Image (cartoon, rainbow, N blue to C red; front, side, top):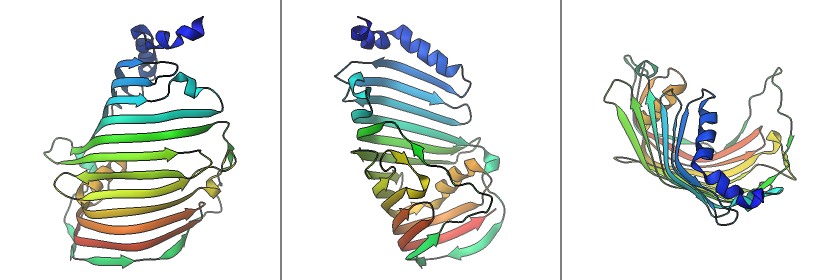
Length: 275
């Protein structure tokens, strides 16, 4: 019957074109997919996926592959098997006026050391509403990998560009009701590296409660150039230009939305602010 041939129907070029056209008709950017293939048991493959948000962000992914087929998506527990995102590339173009300019407002600061083992209470407001717990009807198991990613941040109409490579990430999900293990890292082209490892607890007994979300992660940064990070952050608003390098190793623990503990050290070298 139709159920037997469902993977073949979904894999047809016409079906893919129909889905892509439906997505693109929403006006929230443009998606293109070179090819895709579905099966009940032997996996799902998507090749040459591209997205343009029409606002300066472009994403290309060579391949997305799952070891589980459509059968793993049926039921209250979604089994993704191993999902691999191969060679993603992200390009962000930032408008020049978003990047802070102006005279230098602080002199050079060398080797500013910070060591702060303490609990920081979350800022609250009498008018703020605490998000309500949400019952999640499904669970997810599997391993998600991002391999050999690249990212470029460029300032429009200038020669300023900042490149990142070796972007890798592994998420190990035994259940959304158990800690999700995370290993992630990237390198700046020309020097600097970032690494994050640890776990995040999202749910308990099928309930997503923001007041109970927790994490225990270690962040390591070696000789990371701050300038491209400031340029990237400028996409969210006008911020000062920042130059310098950052070295840090922090262990950050979160227990709910009101309890954060951080311990470690931060070193800023050759810090220069302007704008």
